[in-house]
Amino acid sequence: MRSHYCGQLNESLVDQEVTLCGWVHRRRDHGGVIFLDMRDRDGIAQVVVDPDTPDAFANADRARSEYVLRITGRIRMRPEGTQNANMPTGLIEVLATQVEVLNTAVTPPFQLDEHGKVGEDVRLKYRYIDLRRPEMIDRLRLRSRITHSVRAYLEDNGFLDIETPILTRATPEGARDYLVPSRTHAGEFFALPQSPQLFKQLLMVAGFDRYYQIAKCFRDEDLRADRQPEFTQIDIEASFVEEDDIMGMTEEMIRRLFAEVLDVSLPQFPRMTWHDAMRRYGSDKPDLRIPLEFVDVDDLMKDVDFKVFSGPANAEDGRVAVLRVPGGAKLSRKEIDEYTKFVSIYGARGLAWIKINDRSKGIEGLQSPIVKFMEGVIETLLDRANAEDGDILFFGADRAKVVNEALGALRVKLGGDLDLYTKAWAPLWVVDFPMFERDDSGRLAALHHPFTAPACDPETLKQNPESALSRAYDMVLNGTELGGGSIRIHDQGMQRQVFEALGISDEEAREKFGFLLDGLAHGAPPHGGLAFGLDRLVMLMTGGRTIRDVIAFPKTQSAACLMTEAPGTVSNEQLKELHIRLRQKASDNTTT
Ligand code: ASP
Image (tube, rainbow, N blue to C red; front, side, top):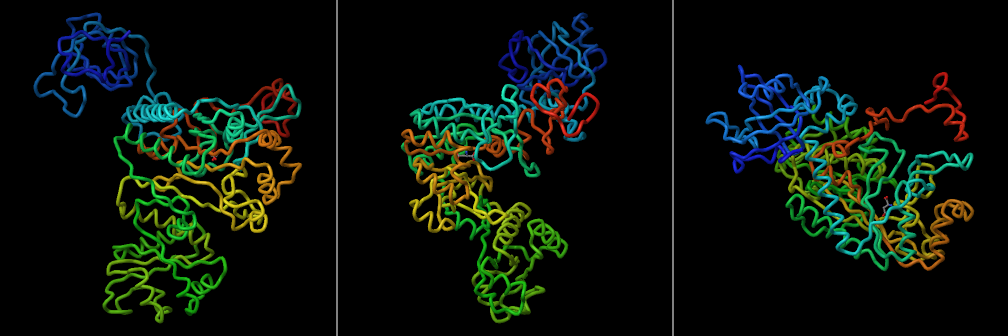
């Protein structure tokens, strides 16, 4: 129906006849001449309709915002003085000869360029209108280029795109499952996959050697953070590989992606152990654009006459650390109070600080409510922190977990607030994770998932599970975990040992993962892989603020779709077929 997209028009087409199809972005009546800004996914072009073409003029006259039109006309230069250099098509316009109304439109719930005036709920309810905004189109277009680049790289490297089931059993990523009742097996349920983990491992057992999939995953998690109940992974697995093979290939893939799509050349990714990352940044996904690092001062604080510091300094699970912020002495009381409130979200009970006004004056040159407790150690402390005039030192003193989270989050916040970034992109690998962590109930839980291979032998794992490291690796970019993976266990004995450490009995393992254990017994090759969170990757690459910005039809924070109104009620007949009776009825015939 069309010869060109609106955004493709330019001065090289002057005098040519073109046919455009699109939406009325804006209509202006200029005393007898009608101007239509026509929009499609490629951009906006100005169309002029004058009364010399009466049919065209009549249709243009009745056109309103978001009407769908087909327009034929001739390209001409805009008259001197009316050209718009800020617009890609701003030098030309189309003099219409035909205007056809393909469809009318009711008044839109918001004007595209006034989307900021309505709440996100309105934009999500009318998502198809919101998606007409050039910014949204650009993001989804970039998303498509990103998946294209990734697919091309993986295909070039011998990976096969293989689909795995959506209706399946619970998978082991540790979140809550989405369940689907079975009609044909009364009382039984499918689970939607939290990841294709076990299937991709079984594809390795089958001998496919290199697999990938752009896979939908489902996790019924707490959505307060920027998460979605369904999200997309670039899922990868390969056989006869070690850590360096997977890390090397996927790093190359991401480097090629950034070069192709953003024209950015990423450096070689540095590697950092989990232990170092926690010690230096309090985080397993440190944002290395920010040059600030923690300085440990436990040894200095053991004997100070200040319980808030000496307590944690002497406690086995305690930590006292300092964060030096260059130029931070200019922070006001009010700003410091706000940071104190901020760290309290992470469990910190306060935020001690010292401002370095003039180091040459010794203790007199410092400003702080706590410095009086530290006379004996202050010089060593300032030296160790490399403190200079104009700095502020912030302290974290608590259980190590609280210090890491609170001071780690403060580091990132200050990096943004004071614009301390030293580079645009800071990728890295985090390696040598512990195999296990203690959950709130004191039980060991897998830090990645229970199919991650330990870096030690089964006997050592049995003796000392808590100090065992895993063969896992995470790729981190600008403080966001882009992806994570590991070399897997391919040996049944080792798998049993890991289950035992996790307190999973043989029966439970059989009942949940029997099919995988059987697979491992049938000639499983050494294998490993990784999965990237595609939504996060696209968000970072497009500069989106949340992953909702890069998902065409996202869900709300309460895991609902405002447009389709899913989840919705179903009839009692449907429930009956599914062998389900609800404990509570929402209304007479229907249920929520
Ligand atoms: N299945 C893992 C996840 O979804 C990734 C992997 O180990 O490959 O986090």
